[in-house]
Length: 508
Image (cartoon, helix red, strand yellow):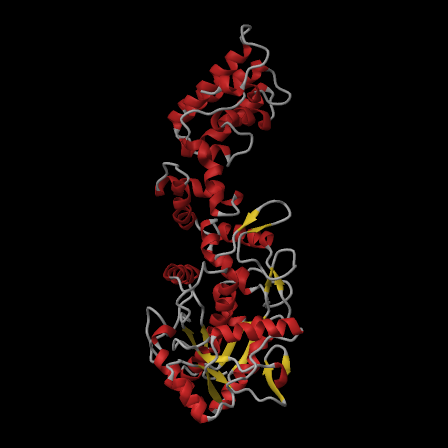
């Protein structure tokens, strides 16, 4: 396609939702695939709901996802300004043009009159809508109202008969009977435009070729076609995107945190995904495949592959469930693709936020040990916090592996202490053969020997690879923990020890 120009035009009124991010992403992909331009425009005419912090949250989220824009805030462009609140004179001028052409009219109805009208319609069981009271006011009556100082709204003069039709790229021809439409407001009495006027004028001025937006805007598109016709402009191509559904497929995805049937709480705002330890490339990949697909089997695609393969024909016409389990799997795959340096850099803030005294060097040493066990970056602290503990807390009886005696466990600790204390280094290639040889000499399985050593060194039955962990922990701390385990096991053996000893009593 030639001259593709698409836009993302959000209203920053709250945290940047992942549904908005998906709409943004599909627009961005289309522009990049077709060699076109992607425009970011801020719809902030509703000043009572606009939040500056929401705007900054959105911009930060876009940068985190690696999504740039060719025109808009921070970068400028030939159609600046890109904040609608700074373009009100443009909308006012265009609204007046419609009035002068007879395609719109001034409405002097007060809020009180409109409230009474709606109440009456409700009592009669009628569909709500403006009764067109001011549509055909005589010029003298309009002048009288203006002389009274009443500032009117401007309404679109919708044809009363016939139908309005438009083509949607995904859904084909859609027709609406004009009798079902009302004369909607284009310009409010405070001089600010409604969405219907502002976005359309901007799309025309900014030469938008394709309007890709949520399917909730389908009912409004007939109005937009009428406005395009009133101005004598050619409409863009409309592509109404399917909704992102909740994980159970029942309705649109919530704008608040989601709790699934298993009791887990999940994020919905892009910032929350970032804080939860998801990688931007994983969320990028996942969102691209939520409502669009390259084929029926490929799930992991690089950014460049997605751009190269993206097309409008493979966008689904039905809503797509937001599968957190799939996202988790995908995120884990992306974590395992990172080299140790990259993973260490991304992991470090999560270690430090958890209160662990880690630096980049330590994070770099740890990264290869836990990469295979991580689903999200937030998993890291719980996987390695034992490394930083001054003392470990565990039941000394766990040092005695299944099929072992206490005496054997005591000897495992003694032999391990001797081997680790005298080894040239704690490199796995140096100490593993010696430890395995000692297990064979003692007639123990490696699982038993290393199980006792694992409990002594980490306090856990499951941990990152043991010998790599010992190397990161260092000789001094490792020997101290083995020595402490020997003391705990000796106390467990003591005839003065009560039958039941609490974990608190065993705590170092």
